[in-house]
Length: 212
Image 1: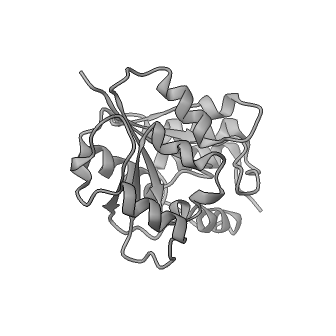
Image 2: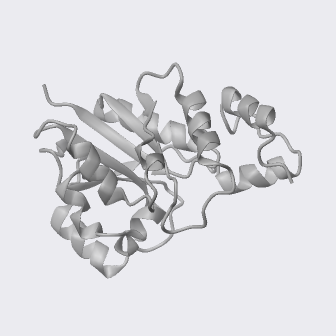
Image 3: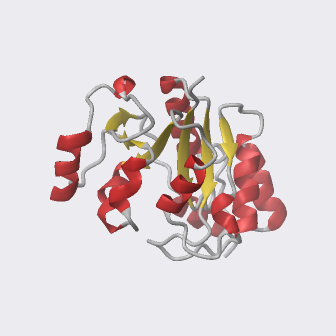
C-alpha cells in the first residue's frame, strides 16, 4: 500500500493554531496517513531562535498529542549543521518505499523564497510541493518560479501522482496568526490563549518562555 506523508518544517517558536490548522486541513483534504512537523535547529534563512530547540520540540509534541493525523519529527534537531530541506527529504526517502508519496507543505512567502534554498532545484526529485495559498497573499513569485509552475504545476491538487515531481496550490482558511506577534504579546504579559493550544500555553508558562 502506498503511504502518503506530508511534511511541514519551521522554527515553531512557538507553534500556533495557524501551523496546526494548515497541517490538519491538508491531511484531511488529501487523505494523508500523517503530516510530520519538523522543528528546525539552525534555520538557514533567519536568525536562530532564542528559545532552545528542546523547548520548541516539546511544544510541538504537546500541540499534536491526541491528534493522530499529526506527529512530531525531530531529525533536523539531531544535526549539527543548518536545517536544509533537501537533507531532510533525502533522509525521509531512505526510510520509505519507492512509490510512497511525500508532500512538502510551504506557505506562499516561503515558496517565493525557494530559489535561495540550498539545492532547491532537487526538491521535486523527492516530493510534491503543496503551496498553501491564502486570499491575502500579495507578493509575486520570481520568474524562475513562474517557469517552474508552468512546467510542473497541476490545477487539481487531487491529481498529483507518483512519489513526487509536481506542484499544486491549496487554498487555506485564513488565520492571521504569527509567532512574532505571539512572542511580543507574551513579552508584554498579554494573553495568547486561543492562539496556541492550551497545552502549549501551559508549557510556556511552566518554563518561563518568551518573557521580556
